Length: 356
Image (cartoon, rainbow, N blue to C red; front, side, top):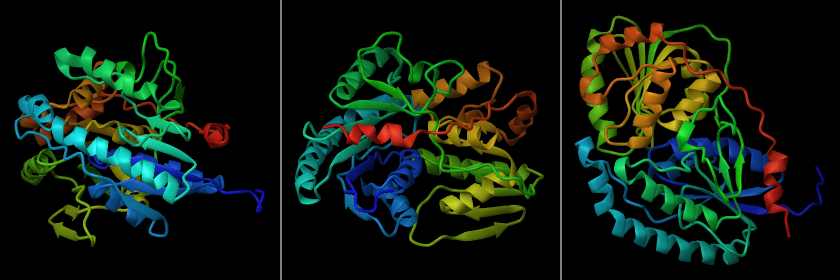
């Protein structure tokens, strides 16, 4: 490393939709530092709080909230999202103005936006990261996909955290039959590493995603777990100022965990019960863990992935309302996700910020 070289400043901005977008940005932030870039992190809500805990020494900026909320009834998810569109559009407009000011104020040289639609500039290299080139919304998938692709088109390039060829993890979500977009498949991203450790827990439950569905599933599983005979670690996915640990019978509850603790917990667990969110999928593949999925009701992306993996004989799933703890016995009949150990060429990826 040339100690006299100018260190470029990169704004990295994950969407605050659960914790997945924030956690998959952790390896990118570390890679930026390793390659002599200065990251500035911008987000809102629990995504921002989680990254503050991971990188307390970095600079943080707060973006306006998209105010994304799930409906209590999954069937109303699309309608709830549609109703929130005016607030979301206003937030995107506001973040565009803020980013324009920040580029001058903090002398930002490049942007990485993980699904934040207003974090973009024509004046500096701007990367959009997503695993959803197609945005599934039932009978309106064609429209939402086209709209999303038009947004991606304005960016310098688009990073998709998956493989370009089969077998891959995203299927139709992250692959287009024909496109003029500048897409780079960078390989799956995970902040976690597989370790040879003693198995301490028969089951790990890890929750994520926006309210109220995260809380609804937590309450359901607290009841279901009473009929489970093994040792369980239960991570609620609620980021708060202080970590809280609670032991009730054979279940150890945590409100949240940092990366090091979560990595240890995953490695010490035999099986995992979780949402079928894509960041969790990448973690499971990296750690070679068998799992059972409960997709978020009404979220087409998670429902698509759960059906895809079950159809391929990899991971079983159940709808949230129908899940019973006995369903976990099905795990033994499935192969589990294929273990991935992709080595990302960060130096090559970051060349986008070196172009004049």
